[in-house]
Image (tube, rainbow, N blue to C red; front, side, top):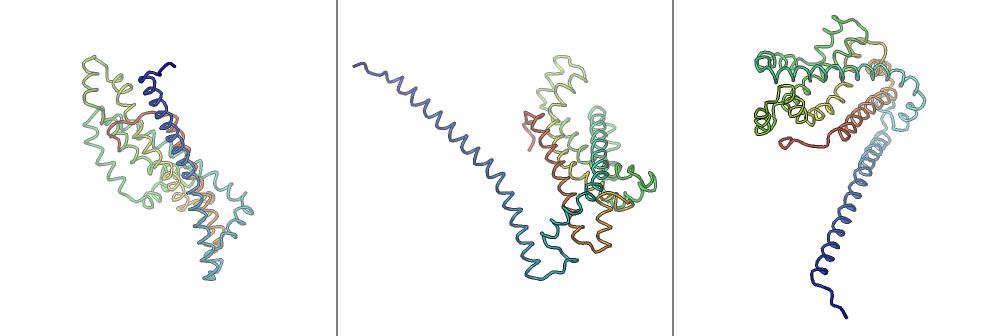
Length: 282
């Protein structure tokens, strides 16, 4: 009978341990995915159940707080009206998102390459950001009229500052050793920017874009409050004045759902684009 070498037994045992560890890791990942999908559903269902119970137990009048059933019926019955008003809000939010973030990226690039510009104008940007959006909105309506332009401008302004700050941070926080290597290799400013600074800044940029995806919708809705006959913001005002609380809740749900979808779209793009993380991004 031939004896099995001890080294073969050790190698087999090691392979079995590795396979067991891999199986355990995959199982844990599967459980995490299930929890990530099931727990939010449980949380939302619990919130709706509590809402329905409070309305029923406290006998809240429908014009004050409608039941979930009434809101659901309104969502189905007035779906066409809700979608008609969602369209302009979506156009304003997406346009403002693109315009504001593009401006922030370009200005951040200029700040990084010309520090005197950053020292001169960054305080001005901070000052403008401290002005409440409800104060900016009437000024923009007076300047740009009562169409989509002021709503797009408000959405752009509300997206601009977080993206500018994150983009400047990402472009500046490159590894000093990598930056020195680019200098040793006689890389031009454009080569350093596209091969070192920009890849380092992309994760920072997407962190800001996910915030901007939600705030752009808020900016468009606030702009519609100031002066508009269509849009989610206008529909909220009309429902409030008409004491149509079911329509008010349905409108808020539709606006929130669009904001969540916008956020998830940016998150999906981030997963497809960003395959790395800078070491100092927390």
